[in-house]
Length: 186
Ligand code: AMP
Image 1 (tube, rainbow, N blue to C red):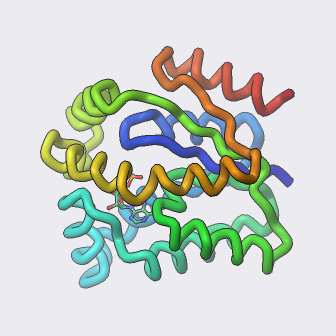
Image 2: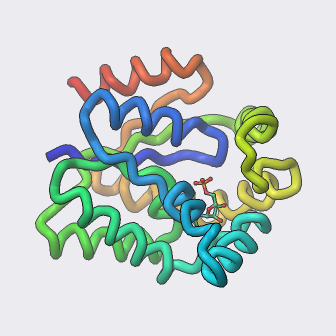
């Protein structure tokens, strides 16, 4: 079974590419951002999540880990692509342990590379139509800081496992997805 992880800064195109990959390889697209946003309308918990998201801060590990483990189990070994999770060392350790206990593993980590300047521009363009309250200049800056400090270090952990495939995130959506498909079909 194919289990993938897509990695990269906010605005790199993780969600778009994960959607295309999921469709082509019949995988469940597990976006932590989407799963959290689905909770926003649910009372007190939703309000707490919204406050973290609007500040560009991470939602607490314990909550995200529990939600993502449930989502992974719900795929019933059908294969998945993780998008936006793990985002901290703590989350990646929890994921490793969880996958091992359940007899699963990650086959590859797709690392979408894009400079902060280009990624910020994309976030702001997306903000015009996404309806996401965190797609604005101020929150984007906070999300990049979090990415550099807490999320990017995870990549070293996966590099040590030899599973990281670097993908240039600058070309068009179609070109990037074609590059990814070629890598996955190798
Ligand atoms: P995204 O849709 O991936 O850009 O995520 C939007 C926001 O949801 C982030 O800025 C965080 O506030 C929250 N979020 C998404 N994924 C995670 C995660 N793995 N851990 C903590 N917070 C997350």
